[in-house]
Length: 326
Image (cartoon, rainbow, N blue to C red):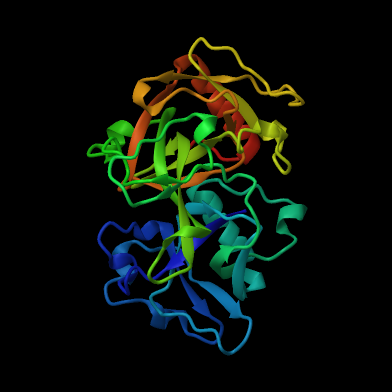
């Protein structure tokens, strides 16, 4: 499930530095005058999308006047997390909501099945059951200079240490985050027992692998590369037709016992940083799940999808996710 976030940008609305007004719209609760939600100077800033009304579930729900929904960025949310339902988009505005999503990213293919439940706005709390896609390495940040690789032997291992110095914030993100680049990044997930956020539930920090599919101005859309705990696509809940094998350049695919040969051709990675470790034979790329990675996080480059595989990367992504090339 893909969602767009609602935020106030520290009470500044779209006037906050770095915000792109054209990607946003006001969100307001029924009974509120949307005109009263514009901040001084915000109306002429380029936020041209019409406000979106939310019908609250009850009278206890409040929403700050600076609340804005961003259509230019989406987040994947698992169906097995706890949420708090605070309302739904007013029925007459659903078409507007979907048009705004499609105009920014082309992310949503609307049919009767997808349209059956009206979009809801909720608050994420914590994970209630294991995520079949969760196979990064758990990391406890206690000791200096821990290093991580792509070997299945390290999956789910509890590693003590700060991130290796190889993880860096990229100073020229537009030059680095190009289609086909493969990198590693620390990825916090709710519901763990290892890292406690001061203002939220415990989280577990895992090392995730991604390949860039859509570079943007301040972030990129990426596809995950996972082993599913060394089970590849044999893991329950994993959809084989959404995946392709990932192998090092000039290597052959090694399917697991009982793993059905995937219909999508394998993609090859040119490993440019041997210190990240070998490519695990169980590595699979999921074309149906899109993640947002900000440019201000620390990453560790692995390499890139070779030129002969980039067109397949694009083709499979388009087939699975219905996302256009813009």
